[in-house]
Image 1 (cartoon, helix red, strand yellow):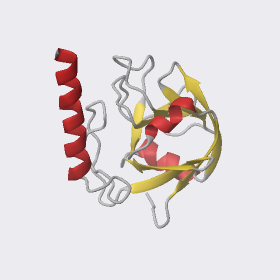
Image 2 (cartoon, one colour):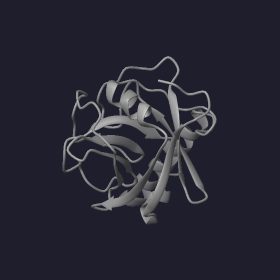
Image 3 (cartoon, one colour):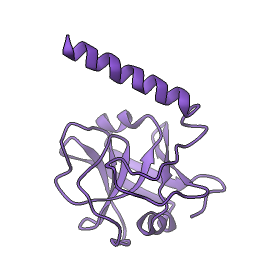
Image 4 (cartoon, one colour):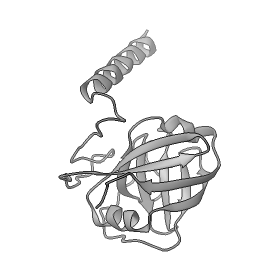
Length: 166
């Protein structure tokens, strides 16, 4: 009974969230907290990126921090996405970007984060671990459809959306 109640409450919360943001693809969520509860500056006009893989297009909002801005400066990028521990699809960047952001091991499904030691940017499609196994810097959040990454491996194209700048 407890499992069914938990599933119902989570479903209800997701429904309320989807109604309150009016459709994630149209209006990106803006928050001053990253998925793991880490403070982030609230951007006046958030930069959005597209993540294209085969016929699938996902959208993400980048946070207003130095690491995210330096990531945006690298775009567009075509990178190979590969799985790390059934938690994220990771991509190796052509060069390191700022690692001055707040490091954490807290995360949430849909998080976009940077692992400086890679240097890698990862797209979190699962939330089955209590925390990540390495320190990360949050740089954004995928708006919807992150479950696509669970079974995908291959090239992805990451671009700023039309009119977006950091």
